[in-house]
Length: 231
Image (cartoon, rainbow, N blue to C red; front, side):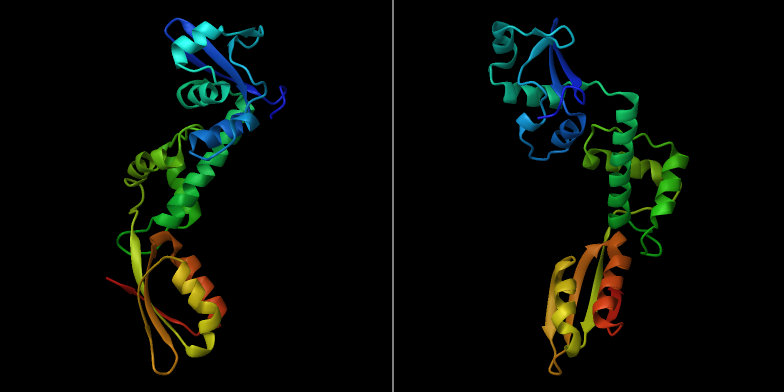
């Protein structure tokens, strides 16, 4: 349970009535992102208020009428998902920065230049977002913001959220460590074991993860691996 000093107000208006709870803003953001979090760990006080600053609780009748339940955990989740969360300037900036970093990471890992089929470096994505004036909502899930942001970035840099198919050949002496990397990094479409003990496979991965994939394979095979992007 979050302390009162660190809690903020989450408020939902229904008709002429207001309902408030005191929450951990970061945990509330995680709930909005779809994470499975115990509501009791989000609330500072296990109660529904009409005015939290005055300490005035919402009436049982009003709660039942508007939410069809008196369970604080269920009502709190509704308020978090549908209401407004009052952040301090510092909290908003911190949460926007965290969400922005998560969005950038997702773009870097899953996007590529459709012409070269190569991933964009993180700095290029960051600069393009600044140039496009991208606004990041600290309470909107990453998956809901990605499409809009990609559309804003495309006039600035060529960007495609695609996957690539890569053919891999691993010599027999490196199968032990490299096979797991090749098989688990993406979706294995096909594999063949050769008579000399070597392994050939076709893996489909997010375009932006190519460099990391190649680095991992080269590391475990000491550079003794053959790869080719397939059309």
